[in-house]
Image (cartoon, rainbow, N blue to C red; front, side, top):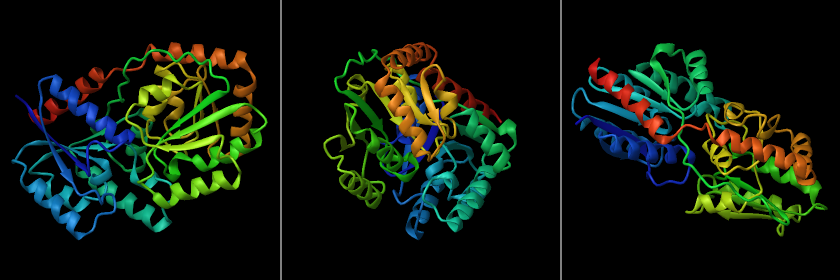
Length: 348
């Protein structure tokens, strides 16, 4: 049986898109007959201290010579020295959900450090696994990784019943961790001028990744007197129920390496409003959503107004979402692509 070591920081049950990808990929690889051994590193990544780095060194040192190892980019992007040191002994596959330097809220010095460390790390890997064609282009163009070493394995999407979309008032769903990159602040400001219209908004997502930012968002809601309209409900275990109870999905992320939550919204047949950022246009077709420029509050308000006031447009985009749902990749397809890559790496 082929054995694969899968390395990630913190806890695998962390509620983010990246960890969801890791969990499902591991599960599907096991279904395909692969023996996957998971290795958890310090949760301090991608800002590791000396203890976290030493723990990563010890963890990789315990992996047998010649083994295939997938290392999640949230840690790998800062493990450049270790990646170079272990590159000949281990068959390292870097999993890059999106480059660390493209995270929002970083100062220029931190961006430069991430850019430099991740480039060294990625170039040391036998292969780089990415979740979208958009990220593949970034990795090859901005991190100088040879194109033949970059493999796309899009996230899968589970089949879902279509949401009825008969809310009164209309129910807006946002599902994302409360971090700066997700641009909840832009959405709150965009909703403020629309209080005369009937709607309710649920912001579902963990607050623990940036508690100060989460508190700032709640203060923004309070300042605009939107407490009765916008509800920051935290993380939930049952994501499907959120999609089934919504009438439209909105998330104006400043950047997405793929955006699994948009695919989940399409799978539920929800019209989508998003920013034209990163890989989002590759996931959300124009037939299923309205895409606006990132950080453009006025354009987002206009898009929201259109969908809140025009049932014909909502139904048109709802039909487009249902059509898009039919061609979303499955997790089995994702796992088969990764299994094929792992076998090629192990034979090399």
